Length: 146
Image (cartoon, rainbow, N blue to C red; front, top):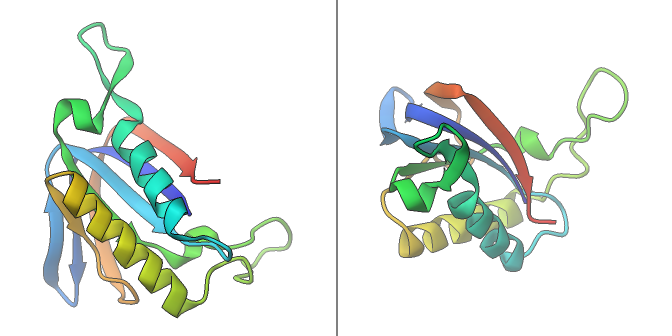
């Protein structure tokens, strides 16, 4: 699994104009599921997201994690993150998990996040979403469970 995480001062996701998830200060995590990923990948990725140090300490160094600052977590499934972009000018999706498997693994990741941490919000798997965010920094990292 892949997560593109962004430190945000606020973020929200809408489906058909309806707000499905929103956070104030925290982390927006766009989630891609790759072929061969399993539940253990979600467990590892969630731990990395919650523990990755992206917030400034009193000296301005990125030494504080989402867990430490108590910010919100917004998980948004994003199929295109798992694309193969190594050659050409059009992405290939043979590296992405099948939709049914990706949905199951995203739902499992979301359930684990909600059980382990609060507040957690989410987008809707398989839907066309509008994501709005204010990237604070900007600070963006690509994390992988592999």
